[in-house]
Each structure stands twice: as structure tokens, then as C-alpha cells.
Length: 288
Image (cartoon, rainbow, N blue to C red; front, side, top):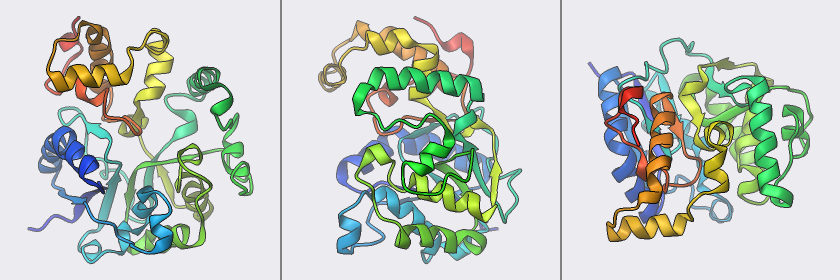
């Protein structure tokens, strides 16, 4: 019997595709096989227009319900291509999501509203004047020019969707909204969250399905932020295959975050992904 659900991601460009295939595809495939999903990685643009080429491919997640393969599935799970899946622990993400709802993590309360606020304050202090500051969920929208109608935020890095019910909303976001100016504005993230909440179609899921490594880092391991080894140096160690003792603590910390999560989201970087011990299944596997 053909699978009625699929996991879909987008990895456009030789580097992004190679990183996904090397770091993510094996553990994603384990999860897909375990829970009965097809796994689809789109490696070519879904829109080649001039407008599309002027903005991030991230916007094109809004087109995944419009593809030839889409009607074959009752539910499609979008996962950003910089996420590791803890296949040993993670349950089936669509299990409790009604087919007419979009399953997603509420960013502003992950893991709790109080802890998220504390994490955000630390990040803003660290980033300084380069940050676009949103002290409340409402400011996520108002800073973008949207009405501040909601006190919740849909994190668009992982979403359970239905081609039958949600295609029009995603296409509306893609075709009616413009990029605000790069990564600081989170690309499609803000208008997509606003439109989904406006439609009243969101079903909140366990935050562990989209646990953000940088949030985990600032909240639980601030000493790694202040004493972090430069990423370029770590990458050089990796390329040269030279032992890097400075990575031991970081490796244990990021692996701990992994085993405490269902899906661990690295939000734009692969340097720390490389350090995760994907064979770790228990807290006892995290050793210095």
C-alpha cells in the first residue's frame, strides 16, 4: 500500500544538497521508514522567475503543496534541511494532527513562555545593535508591517500540512508578500505565521518537534557562547581530519540537546550538526 504521507524538504545548490545528503538523509530515512513516510528532497527551484531569484529559496516551501506529487498525499510534513531527526525517540509527527489543521510548534512558548523570554533576552544582549528586536509575539508582526493581532508565532521550520486544505494559504503568502530584506526578517516566516493564525487552522504540537539548537545553547550552555571556538577553525579541523580537543564539551552538549529532542533545528549552520553523535540514544551516551 502506498504511503499517504510524505516528508519534504528543499536543498537547492550543490553545497546545501551535499550537506543534507551527508548529515540528514540517513537519520531522516530511518524515521521515514519507521513511521511510513515517503521522503522527498527537492533540489531544483520550484520557481525560476526573476522575483524568485531575488529572494531566498526559503520562500519556496510555500509551493510544496502545489507540485505534481502533492495530491498523492493526505498530509505532507515540511522540514527545513538543517534539522536532525532523533529517529530512535521521535514519535510520528502527524499522529495527532487533524488533516484540516497545520501542525506546528508555537515558538513564543518553547519550552515555556518564561524560558523563551529569558533565552530571547540573552540573544539580544549577545547580538547587540544588529538584531531586529521583538519583545513580544505581537512585535514579530508589527515590525513587519502586519497587524499585531496574535500573541503566538508559528515556527515554519517544521509543519504538518494537507494539500487539500492548505495549498491556497501557502500560495497566498508566496505570491502576495515580498521579502523584507534577508535573513534578519526571517524570509517567509512572519507573513506565513500571520496568515495561518488568521485562518484559524493551526494545531500546536510538542516543541520537541522543532527544538532550536541556538535557543538550547543560550539557555543551557551560555559558557559555550562566550567561549565558542571560531566556526572557521572548527571547520578547518574537520577538513584536515585533525583531532580537536576544543570540541569535546561542545560535542557532548549538542548531543545532549539531540537526545532531548525529537527534531533538532540548527537554523542555518552545519558546523555544530557535524558534532552530534547520531548513535547516542540515552543520557548515559553523553560523555566528555
